[in-house]
Length: 158
Image (cartoon, rainbow, N blue to C red; front, side, top):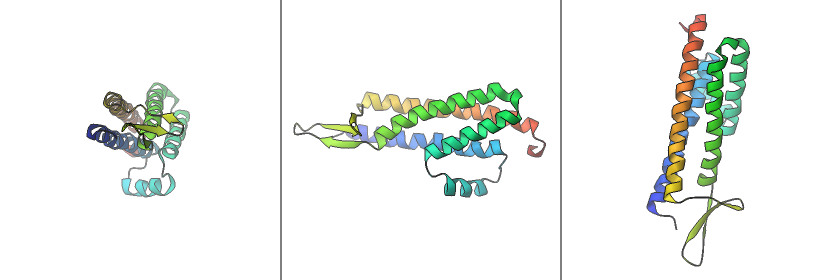
């Protein structure tokens, strides 16, 4: 069995990752110039239900923004780097959240995803949680820097 603390950490990882997902969703719309969030939410929820889909859309939008605003390459690269970090922690989160708890005859349990065991000690889960939070911060700051630079260049955003 997992401890109460392990279950709590898994829940915290899940909720913390939602922050990354929301940041990508929100800034995808900002980078597209979609400022009516209710409309953007309906589009995003109907077309892009999974993080991997939203992540690909985010990457596509960044590529198009880079073509239109090549002078913002450094800021765009910072966002892409943070998005790559988000992909990495998403893989960890997926293994943890979608893992299967396998009980053993000794009374211990193993968390597995596919054929591989998933590290899930309290220390390992705490480490993943801290990385998720750090990625959200990095992504948010990089996106906000790019949003501000884009707004300065777009006549319709003032």
